[in-house]
Image 1 (cartoon, helix red, strand yellow):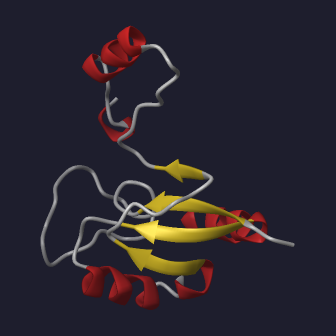
Image 2 (tube, rainbow, N blue to C red; image 1 turned 60 degrees about the vertical axis):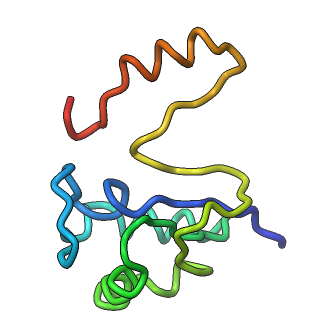
Length: 111
């Protein structure tokens, strides 16, 4: 079976990131993230992407025993079936709606 690729954002999706970025520190694994990765990896190839230092993220992934779920970790937007991110707006073909969605956007942890 050929698996489609899901591009998965790091901060705010896998860890308890709340907008307080720290260069040398990564927040703990979010509750439910391990189960989510186990279930997702059964049907999809997962590429983890981040704007953080890749070495630091790789260390965090290894420390949390998550390496087996990822095809790779990158800071490049790779081709994918879909993207899972905590800071995104879905473009539905309507620019006015997209501008409205951007203006009214709130990150889930700030609701």
